[in-house]
Image (tube, rainbow, N blue to C red):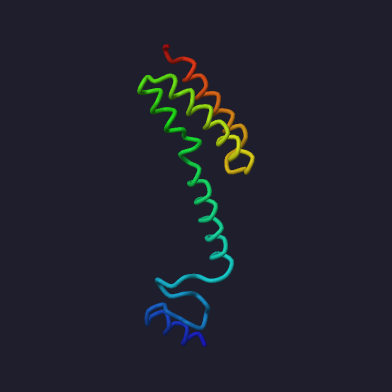
Length: 110
């Protein structure tokens, strides 16, 4: 049996009877399930990324429009709270985002 195994190694490492997929084939079983779960989780987090990044609020602050910044800030607070309740981001991270945005809006000149 050892000789057959060595001949398989020499002939190109592709043994189909071991269950190991050849190059380019998808792995089945536990690792595939874990990969699918990781992809689903990253897609959930990525869907809300602009919400807790608050790009609209930051753009309004950079433009100097305090009324626009205050209105987008108030609407983004509910989004931040919702994604923290769904545990997509941690509640402390949500509080940190809200605090920093609030300080930035308050620091704007009239």
